[in-house]
Structures are given as structure tokens and as C-alpha cells.
Image 1 (tube, one colour):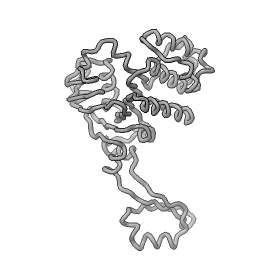
Image 2 (image 1 turned 45 degrees about the horizontal axis):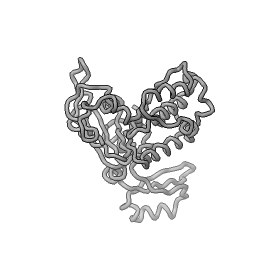
Image 3 (image 1 turned 30 degrees about the horizontal axis):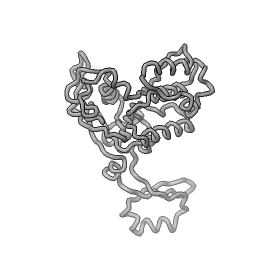
Image 4 (image 1 turned 90 degrees about the vertical axis):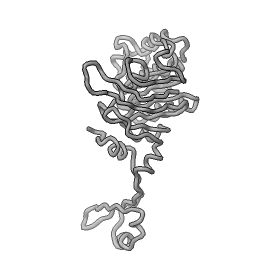
Amino acid sequence: MFKVSDLKFRYPKNEEYAVNGIDFEIKEGEIFGFLGPSGAGKSTTQKLLIKLLKDFEGEVLYQGKPLAEYGDDFYQDIGVSFEMPISFSKLTAMENLEFFKRLYKSTDDVEPLLKRVGLWDSRNKKAGEYSKGMKIRLNFVRALLNNPKMLFLDEPTNGIDPVNGRIMKDMIREFREQGGTVFLTSHIMSDVDELCDRVAFIADGKLREEDSPRNLKLKYGKRTVKVEYRENGDVVAKEFTMDEIKEPAFCELLRTKDIETLHSGETTLEDIFIKVTGVALHE
């Protein structure tokens, strides 16, 4: 669907590139995660793909055609939900959606969408009175209004309670199952692992790694067994590699200690994020 080749972009008056020679492809019908620390180039790349930024170097193809050749009809194909929700605070949720519906040639019925995300009963409440989580859900509904071929989602579950977060993740998966494509950015690695077919990591404007979550775990991970046991009133934790569990010391520990928990561990996407980008998620 999108093919990006040697993409570079530098903001005016900046000497360094915000995006510096990246290559990737977003395949039709997949959820593609685009991950990286703050300032890595994620938002800039997304803005380039949705034509909010222009004058880039390199090539961006959408459906095999240069992105620059598309006019306003391009926006009929996409739905966008940014982390900072955009709405008219003095209008109700329903009035906001009715306004945006006028911008598109065809739109979905908003009632089932609002009911699905739990906003139907508050549809006549002003958007400015919504909580952050409610605003994010309203923004998500707006992104789906025009039956898009592709969704651009920036932190779609950030600030959402677990119940509504599950509903939104289900809706994202259903969108993909119906043939839609998703470009997803998020710092919640468990959501990325759960949703994405492939992920790419960007740091300092350069693409560092790209593959499926499973393949990345196999590449960067080491399987271990973690044992927690009581010793002198304290809980002690020890980790063993798969080779070490064959050794007598492991068997002796299981035989002689008061074992509390015993479970296998694997490298997480958060571990891989830190290894690939060199930055912890909380930084």
C-alpha cells in the first residue's frame, strides 16, 4: 500500500534531518507498528505519509503512485487519530461528527460506532466536557467515519481504561480482518505485540530494525526459567538459561528450597525496544 524509499526530511532552519534515509513498506491488510523514543522521527514520518508535511527527499508511493500526485481525494482513503484529540470543544460529540461527515463523500452511521466505544449516552455532551479517554474514543470514531482503506493511529489506547482499551483493540483487529491497513504508533508495547503483524524501530531519524514481533523475539531473546523461593524469610529470585536447568544445581534448588513460583520467561518487545533504540520507554 505504501512504499517508502530513502525518505529524508529536515525542518526549516535545522541542520540535522528529522528523518534520515529510511526505507520500509506497509502491506495492504496488515497492522504495521512504527516505534521509537520521543524525537526519533515517528511523528514526522506519519505527517509525511498523510501529506501534512511536504518537500521531502526520497520517494513515497501510495498504491504504486507517487504521493505528491494525489489531490484531496487521498483523504477519502485514510482515517487519522492523533494522540492529542482534535475536536471542537463547544460542540457536542454528535455535532463534531456531523461536521466532519460533511468533509467526506460517503460515511458510516455514527450510532453503532458511538455505542461500540461507549459514547452513545453522552453524544449530546460538549466535547470540551469529555475526559481525555472519552476524547480519544471520539477521535477514533471520527477516524472511522469515512470507511477508510487505511488508519493512522497514534497512541490509540493511551489514557483508556482496560475495558474500553479492549474494545478499541478489537475494533482495530476487525478493521484489519475486513481488509483495512493500519499504521500504528504506541509506547504500550503489550498492545503493539498483541496487534501488529510487523514492527519497525526508528531512532535518531534512522530505521534500526524491522520484522514481526515473533521473529524479533527469536532474534534478540534468550529463553529462561525464573524461580522464586523463600530463604530466611525473604523471597529470592534466580534466573536460569535453558542449558542451566539441565545442571545439578537447578535440580538441587528445586529439591531443597521452599519454591513460591516457577515460570518461563521470554524477551519482550520492551526489552527489544531498549536494545534497538538505546532508550528506555519512560525516558
